[in-house]
Image 1 (cartoon, rainbow, N blue to C red):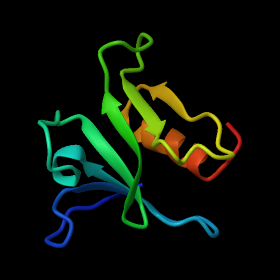
Image 2 (image 1 turned 135 degrees about the vertical axis):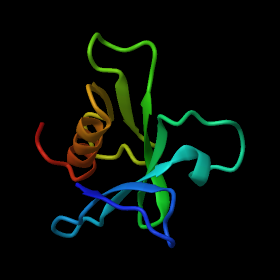
Image 3 (image 1 turned 120 degrees about the vertical axis):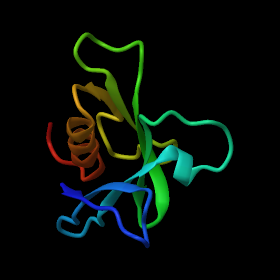
Length: 106
């Protein structure tokens, strides 16, 4: 996972490089991705080819030790399981999201 922040993408937090014929996934702060509402610093959109395809956020109601929830966006569930989950860290949530997105075995 590559950490990146530059003048072109100042709101970009992480990038998972492409694998096979699947494009790179970008993790972008929700406050930079969505203009409406007030977003927590622990709320991120996951983008593929510039479109929001999911979300990773820190939630209060989660299994013990796994406060980061990841979820595929509505309309992006087809042939992908699981469609959501909980992880201990943002990085682990991004990796789990990527496995589901790329239809890899869990």
